[in-house]
Length: 205
Image (cartoon, rainbow, N blue to C red):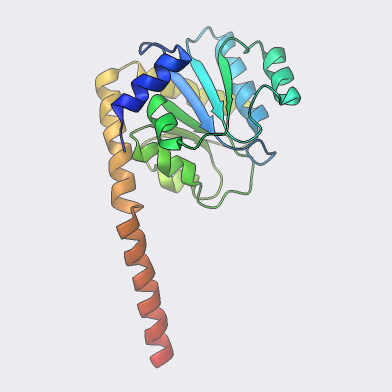
């Protein structure tokens, strides 16, 4: 759920002012998640002189990851991107972000991380993997996987949308409403009941 206190606390801890958009991805370091794609996309945005900061959160996503640090250095992003490692408080991170990005290359089914971000009122950009586009609906931006130029374009469009705060607040509300309407626990339970009733009816028939 939206948590303004968690947002203020983490952004103060990370020294990110409210007038700077904060991009993030919560994902373990794994080829499936394609951190390289995200970093390349962020590098393209930095080359366009767009203002942003970013945080990457997840297992092995820290400064001990030599390959990741080298990629950030090569992209010239060391001052813009923080590697925070794993966290036990994903909702707080989602609240601190202005935009959550999922850059996965393959292998996703129903990426819960998108629903978690949206439930906190955080709009998302995602690659078109698994049910990601279905989760976002019309509330976010979708790019093809393994295409850093397209991902950069999608993130750039989101940052442009963020600059209109009144419209952005409406988008935030739409994100949370979509998860509540289509992907809540109650909705999931009702769908399971429907499936079981249908299966029992077919067996009885």
